[in-house]
Image 1 (cartoon, helix red, strand yellow):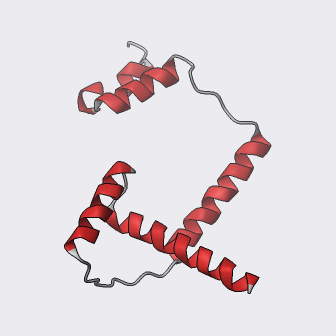
Image 2 (tube, rainbow, N blue to C red):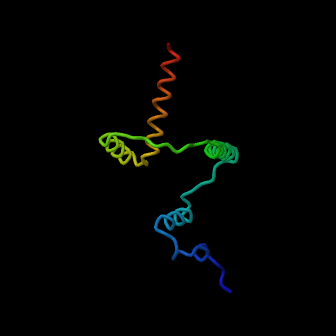
Image 3 (cartoon, rainbow, N blue to C red):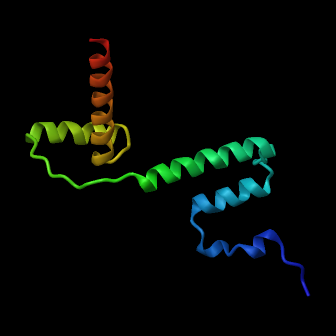
Length: 106
């Protein structure tokens, strides 16, 4: 019986180009393991971020915006390669933070 190789384990026929490149980079030794302590810290940080994401409450809202403003927002979102709702959240978050900082200074 023939011993299975890594390439036999993965059915490359069903993988896209990015997945094939990832497997090849792993097989070529382009990846390295983190030291245990550093890996633990990263895992804890990712778990915390995931918990915060899952625990965050959101509510769907509807906004009426002038067409030119919506066009500008879409252009900006495309420029930064994010969705419109993500861009709006980022902009609102920055403005809220700036407003809070200004209020503290007063």
